[in-house]
Image (cartoon, rainbow, N blue to C red; front, side, top):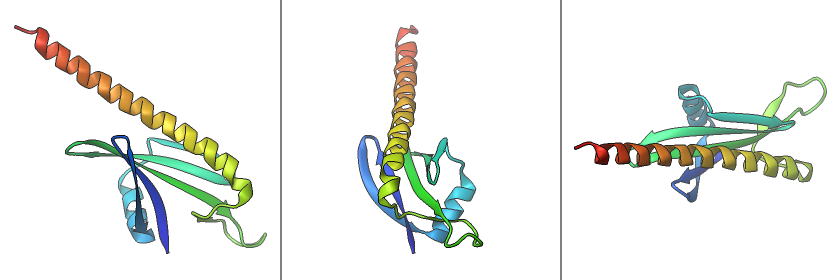
Length: 119
């Protein structure tokens, strides 16, 4: 079984999949920079630094129980009733990512301007 992640690379969106064990290992290494739930749908945004800048990955999941006595589980599959909450959560995740990218751009601009003013 695979978990679907959306990876945002400097404005481009690429789809990547990872096994559950890989996803668990990655989740153990880093915490999300943003996480929110509109029950039963959850979104988490992870930030990854690399040589060329910053990448973001988004994990969208839905919680469910098979019956009243079973444990809660998560899945990447959504039902019709989950589409609007998922869209709103993804919109908020997009806003968080754009704000972080804008902040990073401003910091680079200020650092560049600071170096040019020194003689």
